[in-house]
Image (cartoon, rainbow, N blue to C red; front, top):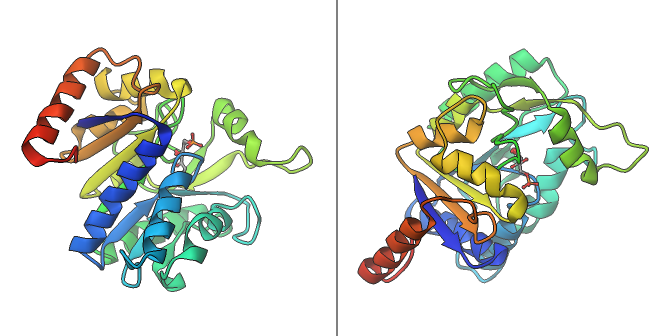
Length: 261
Ligand code: F6R
């Protein structure tokens, strides 16, 4: 697992976007795994800007989102489909039929199987973007999720429901269930890149990077991935025991390569 410590949330987003752009420049028909939540919004803003500047194209790109609420139609303002349209898809040259988000409306078991098949038929995910829950979840794989789980329905923890309540108004019913790629599905991606910013994520970052691999902290499963990149700001990195080592690796990389990444 490679840990990059950036000076600010903005730098986290910029570096994350740079990774996506490099991939798309090398492989214009790449398959991207995408996340929702507040963390990747600034990364998506960078991608939009770089698209507008003509530096990158999404014309051949296919995307698979991590998750979607169950019982919420795609047109619902709080659906992850609406989120992705607003934060990214409506502003880039991606073909609508190449964007995939699990459907929260059909039979969850059939939908989950079909989603796995679609990822497989696309040749697998080249780069999976991830955020990190305060309880260590990735996608909606809450603590005690099987580390080899595949796409399926999950019940959200009350903590996650509370954390996400900021997106719902008081009179809106907030879903308690979601379809999510499993941890096994995420680990199958050729590269994974997790972004986290802010002091509220510091405990989760420490457990993910330096804790034991445990279903109690689903993101710790990324320690088993051969190409996992973690980009965090100084606040999210503040509890890492080996922080000086990660910074040292960073400066050595800069010295040898002329860039952090
Ligand atoms: C979103 C997702 C979640 C979020 C996580 C962090 O598709 O799968 O795992 O990445 O809850 O959310 P934020 O970024 O809002 O802190």
